[in-house]
Image (cartoon, rainbow, N blue to C red; front, side, top):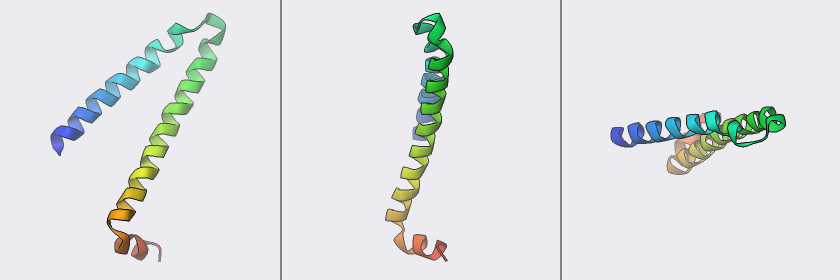
Length: 71
């Protein structure tokens, strides 16, 4: 379990950092600011989506606990 966490943290952190650094360099100068904003929006959206999926899967795994937390 810990190896998976370390592996995902390294690959996701390294990959997303490289994308955020080199992504705006691949567009024309007048589009760099917009490209950075779009990339940041999708990065935050992906983190939110992943969090919601994790919560949904946890509620599927432990349905009784999920129902108790609603009250």
